[in-house]
Image (cartoon, rainbow, N blue to C red; front, side, top):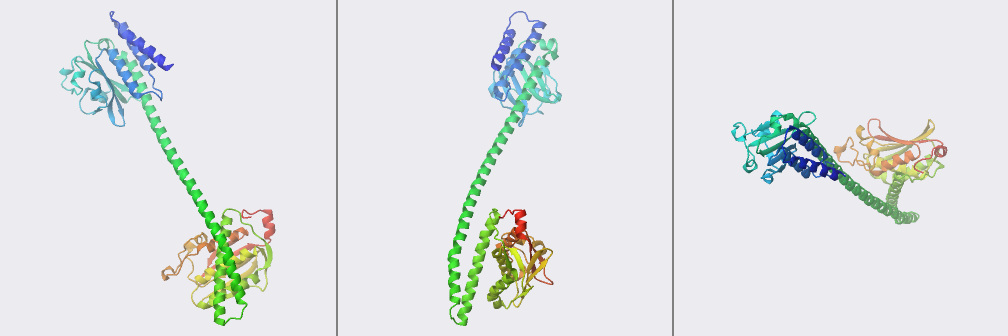
Length: 462
């Protein structure tokens, strides 16, 4: 439909321009109205060709003014550029960059925002004739500014080679303004289309990159999931042979062995049991992380559990002359997951041993307070810098101790991270506070009546 309208308006304009009868003022008025309508009918939709559109505009103006050449200069990203040209020598100037300060006709129009009309362009000394000589065999030349809605010059239309003075010079120079306004509107639409296309291209490029990043992330996530599952399966499979070793070592302990051999045996068993605890902590930490950990809550004597764990660690503590003491009641019942609480204690004691000086003292405390059971592990080690006291509960976090210069290991590994997740699974907490003078104290709080708490507010871990 648009093509038919364009063809109709162009045909009407061409027929009127080709009349051989006497051409009066009325004829030129009708001709410029037809030119305006022909220009307005030109397709400048998003799918239209900018080259075809600008060439049609040049052709209409060349026909309207009876010239042998026409050109259209438009301001864009590269400055002032000849975007379209018709007539002899058109191919030679197409794409030429125009310097607005070179003194040419076009530069005068750009600066003054006014049209120029010349009956003899060669007689004007202040104008530099830059166009190809073959384009203007005749001297009559005119140049018009294309103004935007805010009055800025957005382009220039040049027509040359007229053989006689045109009515536009003799009658009413402003009568051509309608056609010029139509051209300016078309050029503005072309520029807008160009901006939209660039924006769409940019958006499409970013969407393509985003999709690529999203795919990479999905592949990475899938790869990480596979590696995590393999690691989980590997750690899980370590339990069986390690449990077998521990069972055999326990069997050997019941045999009559020399004191030295028994000491080595017990130390080996302790190391295997600690390794088993680490495996279980890793497996439970994974389950807690994905919300599939289940507590097995029962009522047991925490004081007895502490004494049992204390005895296990005394197998290695005597090598550095480290004393482990218990400060608390003879018996204290608690409702919790006994195996998990035992591993919390083991991790805290292991951490305390690694950071205790030779001849140091570790104290395990236990008490009831404010509807909760509180147990703690105090050491006399290098302590923990205040800025690190929260980060040490993150998995694999390296805490900088106040005695880092001594070369001691500042790593708190997965153990404390497990303790934090395990305490929170019990609806409790773990915190670190500075010791009196030196060292550190890890305090674990487990609320009373845990089975009722979990029943009233189901945990994300169970």
